[in-house]
Structures are given as structure tokens and as C-alpha cells.
Amino acid sequence: GPLQPLRRGAFILLEGCDRSGKSTQAAKLVRQLKARGCRVEHMRFPDRTTPIGKMIDAYLKSTQELDDHAGNDEKIFVKVKVPSSFTSRFSVRLKLVCSASGTSIVVERYAYSGIAFSAAKGLDFSWCKSSDVGLLAPDITLFLDLPICEAGKRAGFGDERYEKEDFQRNVRSQFLDMKHDDMKIIDARKTIDEIHRELVAIAIETIKKCATLPLKDLWK
Ligand code: FDM
Image (cartoon, rainbow, N blue to C red; front, side):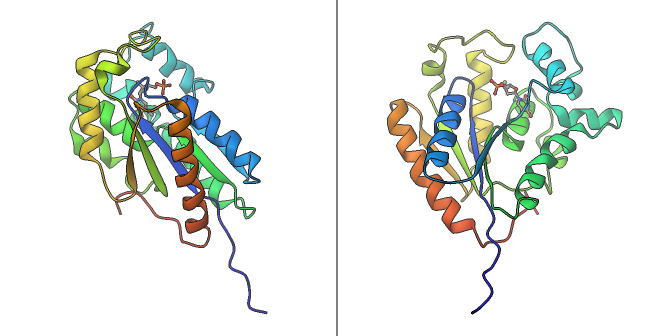
């Protein structure tokens, strides 16, 4: 018979402002996809368990100051010629490309967060974008959109450096400026289970649709 094309997994990205429910939904989504027999792994940026992630964690908790060009993300460390963002973010490409088994990944935050937060701090939008051109593009980006006044009422809001309502409003508008066909806006005011069902349906559709499609690069 004809050769079967290799099937790849999907790159499913969850984005959103702080306290929009990304971690809750990512964990539920991964569990549900596994229950349905999908091979799937969970990743997040920043990963606060890595050495650089620990510095970022301290920065976000305001216990350590970093230059803004250095504080915003792993990618920053390009500045000191340690391409850490690339090691960590390339791990996204490695996961998809090196698993002929077709493992999908559910990722919390990625280039859009880096750009939205950096631009909201006043850094030049094109500069923020430039180091992410050519990274692996998500197959779908699910933007969990919660009114900032609602986010402000959620437990823990304000614990970290960026959790201020005016700043988050700016971040949200930066995110929305990057809206494109592969970015879906999800109403994050709904219940956890309603959102979960919506995300599962989109994820399954994306996994089916992408299985034999080529990978894409961001902004190329
Ligand atoms: N953040 C996240 C950035 O400023 N730049 C980035 O590139 C990324 C990926 O780090 F305030 C910010 C966004 C948020 C914080 O918080 C991470 P969580 O709760 O770990 O997602």
C-alpha cells in the first residue's frame, strides 16, 4: 500500500495575562488528552526550575533587580552571549521534531508573553520581536482573556512585580495587537469546566489537523 506520512504532534500554546487560568487549564488539558490516548507533554516559560529560571523567579518576586533588557526573559541572556532562550525555547522544536512518535505539547506562555510584557514596559516592539523571529510557531494559540478587573480579584494577584492592574491592561492590549488567524480568544470569565471543554475540543481538532502538516516558523 501507499506509504503512510509520518504523523507529528501539535504545538498548543496557552497565553494570557496573569491569573487568567493558564496553569489550571494546561494541567486539565494535558490530563484529558492523556486520558484520550494522546501522547502529550506539558511545558512552560519561564521554567522556574532551571538555573536561569531561578533568577527570573527572583526577579519576578522582586527580590532581585535585573536590567530590563535582561530581566524580561531567558532570551535576554543573549545579551551576555548565552543563548539560553534558545536552549529553552528550542526545546519546543526538539520535542516535536525528535519524537517521530508524534508527541504533542501544551505550552504555557511563549514568545507572545515575552513581547507583550517587554513592550508594556516600554521596550521597542520590533526589538522585542526580533529575537523570536524563526522560533517554532504554535499550531494554535489560545488566549485566555479575562477582564483585568476580574484578574485583580483573583487569589494571589499582586504577589509579583508585574501584577498591577494598569500594567496588565497594557499587556493585554499588546497581546491583542498580535492577534492573527492561529490565535483564538477564549472568554476566561466562564467556569473552569466550560473553558476546559472548549480547550479540549480545539486541541483535539488541532492535533488531527496538524498531524501531517509541516511545522511553521514564527513571523517568517
Ligand atoms: N514573562 C514571561 C515575561 O516577562 N517574559 C517572558 O518571555 C515570559 C515567558 O513572567 F509575569 C512574565 C509574564 C509573567 C511572568 O509568570 C511569569 P507565570 O505565572 O510563571 O506564568
